[in-house]
Image (cartoon, rainbow, N blue to C red; front, side, top):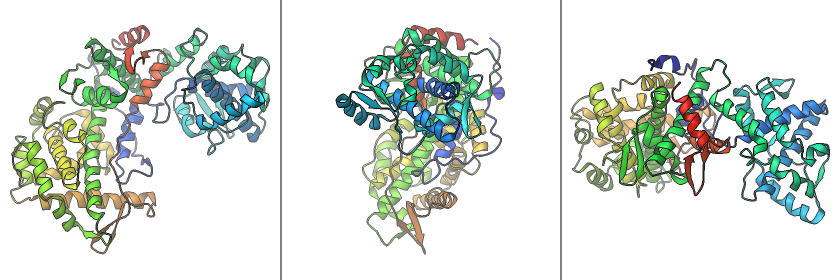
Length: 548
């Protein structure tokens, strides 16, 4: 097998783009997450998880142009709205448990139709957006995938999007909705919706009439069209291939992936720890296919950043807990002194196995006497596995009962990360660090622990520096940058820090759950009995792409 040129597949970010991680991102930690996942799963985001929307929206844009009725933007909006409403109505009618975009709007429409015998199809599925799910969620993804283009304010399909539109049209062409041109009507007979529902439903890609559409979607997501693949399409192809391979390996070992454990089983365990998590007390080694190793190394960096983010945001949570009982505020040094009381020391002692009266003593429990070397880091990555008593998995998985426990688990996590990554000779780590710039990432946070090696560094000193720089100063910087000073989590008043609102560290999506739903829609995965298994087509496709 030919040697893989890792550099050829490295994402080439030409500049640092500061994406807004939303209103609930007080330290800007979502920015690095999104930079990584944007490149690994191009066209699949946290709000796009149904494969058929990619073809349906292409068809809607194409069909409006083919029927020639949208001469003005207002006409285009109305025509688009009616088609999307009909899709949502059909999906619910075909499967009452389905959740298409606009499910809350569809229910009352169908209830009213049982009395009137006709259904109002002229409504916005999302009241906040004239173009519904397309405008709110999918438009950017279709544009990134080259399926659509902008033209005088109205989106059109491209040469790549046209075949998908035609395939969807073929699947619905024989329905009363098309035969009788019901897209022109505000109201549609309930019986005609029932007769059209199975063809229009989001859940119909596995049906024989949708075989062409399904095959085109597979080619789209896996870049199987025979043309030269871009860097990002290759990374998406390999990311999806890794999902198939990992789920197949779990199945082969008699422990199919569960819906409730997707992030840990499919993302963190195999990519970060190189293990498969079979049960609470059982894990086995996972070997990444050679073709996917570069992509896998970037997923490992995604996981690393989530551990860093969780530790830093846990410090923020603990600071806010201390401030909860002090409405007039508390200076930083007093916040830290309260955080390192007996509950903090007891929690560290329970997990580390001995008293750790200073940061240096904690690092010593991991065998760290001086700044780790690259070989030391490689050894720790191999030694401290998924179920090791000091693993990031163990310390981050438990929910702390108080602020002291929270800080203890945060510093325990950071110490373990320091032992594994402070001098990591990993191309993906170096690349993410360089491109993260001044954002909080492992490459910026872990050097703070160098000071912990000093015999004069106390927990008070260590936390004042870490919390001051990575929590309070970082929060101020992010809030000023967002110009969002009215929705802060804390603020300064003279020397004191005052709490504005609560915060709980979130779990950031890897987008792999969305990708898995799409893979199920195009019949590469089977999601029966709340577990995932590869289909015959999934195995065939995996074998094809893992040997190329």
